[in-house]
Image (cartoon, rainbow, N blue to C red; front, side, top):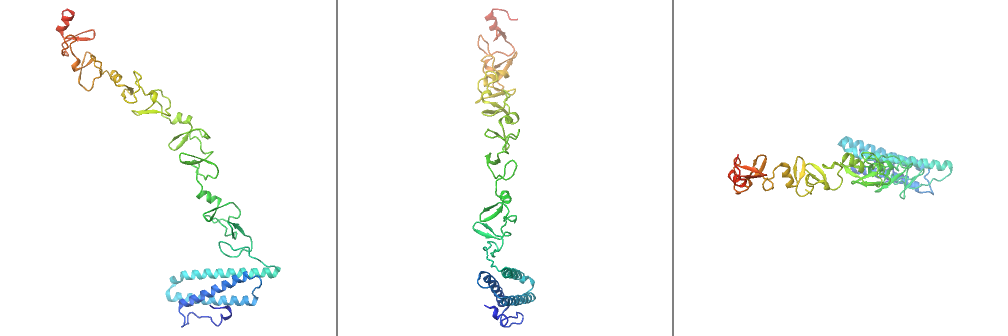
Length: 364
């Protein structure tokens, strides 16, 4: 280690030295810088004694010698290895030089104030950011002290001393940044929610924003209906959104049946003819629901003889009436009839000969 009293005799010329390598010279100069910085800090903490102007001048001379030697090393390094190899080191040294100059100025200013006003300036604490003493205005937060210019929002870098701030995860945020990045957003206005809110449809809403999409009236404690992610009051939902019952034409809200691309109230989903429920088995004719028997009646597919439904094409039609093939028979002899050669009487059909026997008349 090199102290200030021997700095002149131990000054190193990094270009001509044969005993030390370039890296050793760099290390040695770096140590000199650190010694000077340590001296300035210790002088602030020693309240009983201050450096005399002569010793202060000597310290400055030592520092200048160290910096001059450092510049020579950097120049020599640039010539031998190229500027790219020295960029990082030069940046580090520049930072140390600025810190040293700043510390020197602060020490001189502190000493001058103390001498001119016959007072002793005491540090009000170490800044938690720059780790320097605080002599002027100080900010207190979370048991730490800060320079006002260092007590800032981690996002926007604005000073926090004049407004509200939020401490989160060991970091400080101004209120606007905290609201923007951490507070939930209202599902309607997309603005941060900072006060009382309500939750509905897995979303958060300002109380005033949770309103009917149709009439814009706040819900309060009323129930609502959801449609495509938007809430509606019951009146607007029934008037504009709810499907209408195919029978009564009123809005369908609760229990309903959806069949044949139509909505039906449960109590309206009945046979069009006999009004029996068709919830388990329904047949549509001309877009109306029927039970099986009434469906065939409506379509005219009931056997005129047995009154049972006709299925498929296995039937015959005679004089506007339809029969199962096996049921188109003589009412007297019960044998199958010819669709052309027969006689009818009182909704019954006969062979011609059977007709003569039964009614004792000559066939016409």
